[in-house]
Image 1: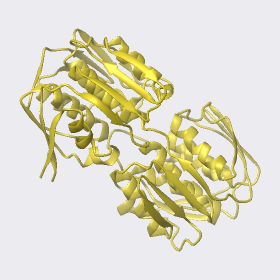
Image 2 (image 1 turned 90 degrees about the vertical axis):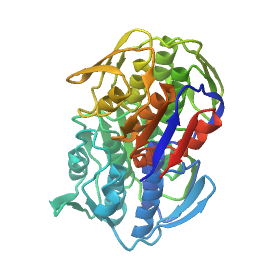
Image 3 (image 1 turned 45 degrees about the vertical axis):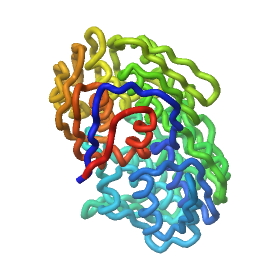
Length: 416
């Protein structure tokens, strides 16, 4: 099993290009199922989840022609309308084939999903939405089996804000008969990116980026070309790493307009942040100041940045409080940070952190994707060597992170 060995105490300095967003790329790849023509995607990130989605689509019969930082998908001839357990168990995003398959082919069989064990992310919102659109759904032997002659428009109000639920039903509604309205919809930029791709394919969608999305169904969609948006979580992770190490870095191919909350918090730490077009520059002189964080759905502070800011707070000046409101089991990185000397106490969904002068290197174990990133950041500010185990979590959502960090001056290497 591979690990990352990190020698702490080195500041990050230089430029780094931000990759395409994993959380936008995965649903957009699934959108290729909605048409019989080529869908060409640029700026696809080279990471494990994207490769898993490619294999899943190919297993169904999608032809995939991969290019540098991109690929062309053609779903003209599918011979298997199924997402099997061995594909879905490591990647919850595979549930996103459900809506497109039912909408275009009238049938889908999708395994109940797996992914990071960070808390309950029920699929009942997907199921209820498709049932409201006329699908018959049975759950048998761990699979969701959905059928419909043709989906019809419906007025759907989500009980909870769900990003993948919004994406799945938006794709399904694109080919439904009539008008579908999604209330209490997710507002994330990745939802908007998917909507932009669907519109390029001929879908009629209004309101993406707000809590009310209206989709007018069309008979069929066509091919298109789309560039996947930059990854805001990778952007935030590198900026936090620079702030924690007292460095100065510039992100290129980034988008500051979808990072407002993260950039505001970084400025609170004492970092100087400048934005010029698709470039974001951060400089931190001295020890960062501790900042309080409370996660909430977009446009509030993202849960996917909670662990990274907690790592920064462990060595910041002063005390801080981190409140996690999205997932009930997203503090699993705390005990690993404590192994490095972090002073953190957990009270329910709240972490109370007292910043210390420094952490000390130790062996730690990654528990999920963003927890992995927090341990890498902590390792870069710890004295001595930190060994991060189970980095397959990290590889699911970051493109060549050790190579990018090494180019910025970090002492980090992959070992078996």
